[in-house]
Length: 407
Image 1 (tube, rainbow, N blue to C red):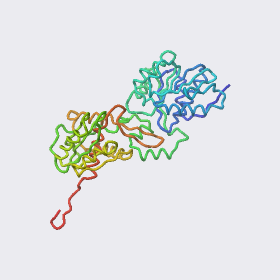
Image 2: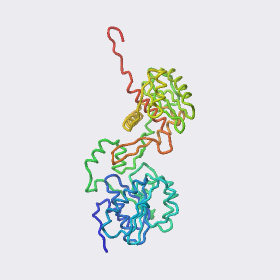
Image 3: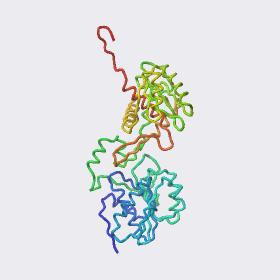
Image 4: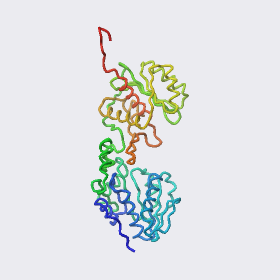
């Protein structure tokens, strides 16, 4: 039986040429709107039908992504007569050619140890840790492996870019790479594209839709643009304070800033009683006569009320996805234009570390961005700085109005 696949656009055809070529490791830059998932399903069928008794792995960063692709592939071929069995609980699809396709997630990567495969697709490769590839996925393909397709949107200059670069090097015969672009897709959703172009920050649009390995990648802050100082200066003018709360796993951070956006003091503490940390912050609040803004989610309500009773010039900040995005994007602009200056790396290293790793996660389905630290890292100093900067801009006195000799 001969099965004819659907017509592919030019970008997808370039990938097919790689699949037919001699290289084992194939890296494909596939931004949004290029038909990446559709192409991955075609590759699995191509291998599963033409290379009988193949053991194919489709690996996604999450179970939900793997399940979605499995269901889409099965629904597409269920009536073709090529399916031998379909096991939803084991995430496995078996073809009558003897080939088996496993749909796996690297959320619990250790569960993949011990498998052996002939073909593999690593979906959104840039979003899997490099150690997952080296210690878990690569061993699956060492003995019988024939082809590994890395297909992803970029995520800065990480290991996926290294795979792509090796594929461009003619001396690396075991590697090959190419790009797809949304302009090659005849089914392009122009409305989605223009909405993304209008609403997304430039570097995010470039990575997600242009497939650009931007220097910032998923990074939110360009550290080379940040203006810093090596010595704290004395307080001058009205002082503003933003407090992000944490006690056990996270830190409580209170940042103090002058009207010009210069940080004059940072309090950072954890593993202490709330009463102790509140008392220590109150000393600083009184010292600087600060206008205070406190994040009030979760335990924040109680701490806010405690501070408010002692200091009337205290205001709540409710963290939602929108409010967080607003203050983070505002901070990014002010840091990159020099409107906010921070202590140097030597003077306060935790802030530099957290700013450097702070990242975004973009959802093409909802067209929304979520900001935060990578898993297992902190972003308390970043959030405190962002709240402080927001407090400053919301409450800043832009001048004086004098009537009859009085202010």
